[in-house]
Image 1 (cartoon, helix red, strand yellow):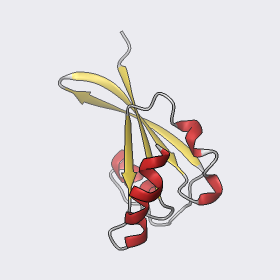
Image 2 (cartoon, rainbow, N blue to C red):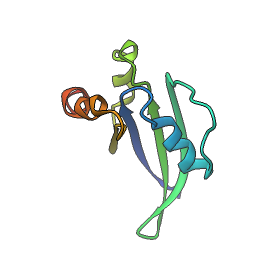
Image 3 (cartoon, rainbow, N blue to C red):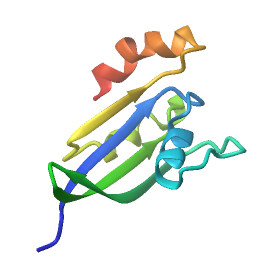
Image 4 (tube, helix red, strand yellow):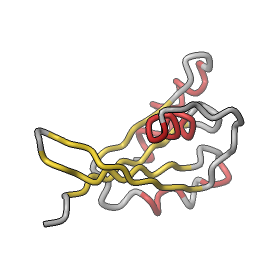
Length: 103
């Protein structure tokens, strides 16, 4: 029987480290160059309580230009990971002002 799946969509302002965090998680290395994302997804195998799962990681663009495209990745999401930068108070404020209402 194929593993069950978990869909995780990562949202947050542009340049807060969403792509770098996912890259580091999936490769155990940190990217040396910032590359803005429009949309990307990855799949990794994880174990939850001893059961295998396919964890789908959906990286979204935080820029306002992509506000109409982002919600296309939201259906059937199990987990939303809302990100901000600890050195950007605006990105933290946008968690409550933009990201939580959007999802």
